[in-house]
Image 1 (cartoon, rainbow, N blue to C red):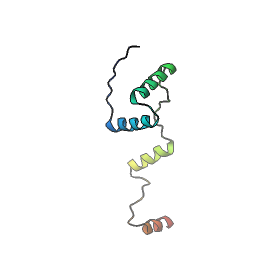
Image 2: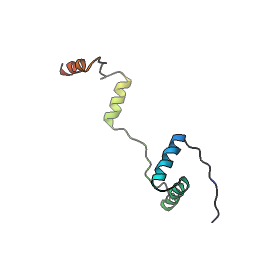
Image 3: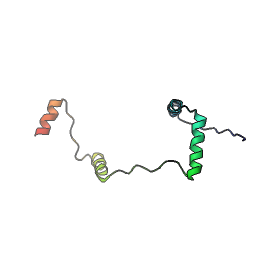
Image 4: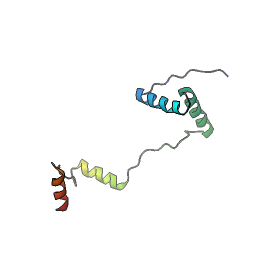
Length: 88
């Protein structure tokens, strides 16, 4: 089987972390990428679920409050001061 070269630009830390993982699994980068590509072809798509994070309504409301400076606690200089405020 003829082979072809593929050049990929990656974040250096991502490459390092992936190489460490693959090494622990007894794989090298080429074998791991080949496995990924074969699974993508077999699945006729990515071999894992891809979706964006969807924030729930409580989280969206909290973000809105922070952005509008509502329902935000003041800063405390000590745990004692915080606890006194919580008990009030």
